[in-house]
Amino acid sequence: MKRYLPFIIIVLALIAAIAIFVTMFRGGTGSGDSSAGLVNSNQSAQLFGRNSAPNQASPGQSSPGSDGLTKPNVKVSSPVIVEEYGDYQCPPCGLLYPELKQIEHEYGNQVQIVFHHFPLTRMHKNALTAAHAAEAARNQDKFWEMHDRLYRNQKEWVDLDDPRPLFISYARQLNLKLPQFTSDMDSNQVDQRISADIQRGTAAGVTGTPTVFIDSHMLRYEATTPEGLRKGINAMLLRRATP
Image (cartoon, rainbow, N blue to C red):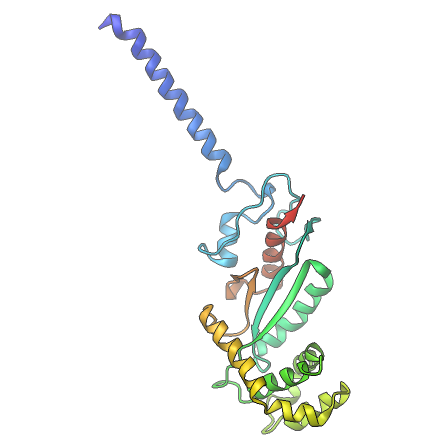
């Protein structure tokens, strides 16, 4: 037995060295610390859910700060896409509207805001008519202008029995061709575009409004806050940062 003792000691030492190496390797390639660039794994789960959390940025990219709110100083080849499924009569959507406008102002060409219709017709009697007004304005290249008026003036029309005259007055303020606008509000083309948004949202798991996707990752409803939106956008900016 004594003859084999040196060999046994060498084998045990090799096994210990391999175990130490494996431990260090796993520690270096795991979730890492926040200085790597993104919110940590727990924060990602709180924003997007564990199954759709963004990948971690590579070391060396700028950090968005310990709270994830400071806009990272990075260049991106294409903007982060922020998609909202919204209902013009939905009060929380009305509260989210100015925040998204502020984000658009803050981030400039780093972010692109996209709106999809998801009118909750069983709850909001005028939501579908408002969506038709926005799409009718799109036919004259004034979608966002009508979109803004619908949200800014939400309290004016939510309780009306017939909001169409008010929406026509918005179209007049935007210098739209009124005969075309009123005809388009009732058109099958407009109806199909809204229905396509609803079908797309339903297939993506949308069940209420507002629902926000950041680069196709659904933001948790409880994270759809000014803080959560910025953390999610910053995470995606770092993910797609160019050298």
